[in-house]
Length: 388
Image 1: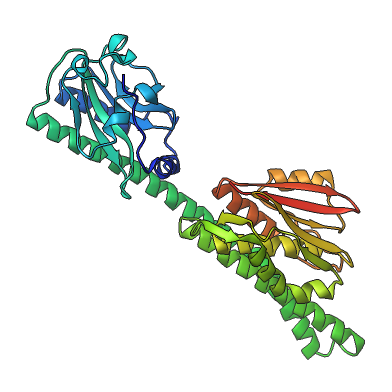
Image 2 (image 1 turned 90 degrees about the horizontal axis):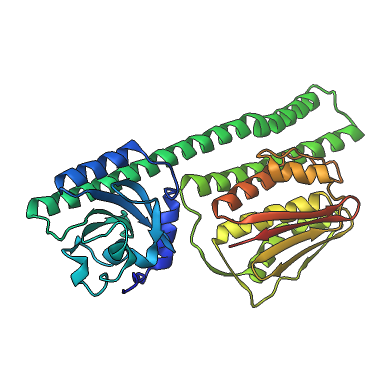
């Protein structure tokens, strides 16, 4: 037996498959209908929509005496995706690749096989539509053409599912943006407007004037930061991808983020240290990495007064640690389990919405990465970002 080979683009091919979110989903009538039609047209007792995972071929739809999956190493479909057209095996006993294959020598006793690769719009072969028989035979020209057409129809159904899912995600993004704008942006601006109106009406005078104007300035700064975060998060979601993933110099990008936040850090008499390794390159989109670092440093500065903020790394884990107020176990659990984050005033009573951490958490989920928190009240917090 010759084990099914791996395509040269196997790693990217698998990612394409996983992005479709089809593996291990329930059987669906749309796919079941296609295998029934393929079986009838080709006069074959078995027909399958297979998806080729790293170690197995899994059946999204099937007719006949077949289980739910088989090892990829013994699969006929693993061989079929190496080509661009239908792979037809008239008699498996006469083929050196399959004559002693357990799918031939044991149940389901395959003799005839014909499989057409399922190809995504980007050209990756994720599986096949195939027909199988227990006796040697051939497909005629009309049957071959029909099998190709049905395989394309399988991909159209898959692509339609992806479009529907993306549409739902975009709707969720839109609703979340509207919700945040309606509450977290409108309220601070309303406060600023009230302060300015009170000043115009003469209700704010003398020493109170400087205090209230500083308060208004802080509200505006907070709102600008919030809108920037929201715009960047919306871009990452609405574009449907996570940017250009490439090796990035972590130390240099961290330095850039620190420079942009220097005034805020100095205003609270904090010291910031970039202890990331200069020879470490992190695989992530540059805008996304800057977004994460900027928000974590800002958050650390918010809860630290006359203390130290340290950014460091351990392989693919980036940590932002502070010597600030720390978090209770209940606060950590709320952040870990809930989608919304409740804001807490900073050491100078800085306002906020908790939006930054919420958006970081949401983005990390999309790129299959994680955020961990170590914290102790009165001693500080470390937030660890583990990238894949």
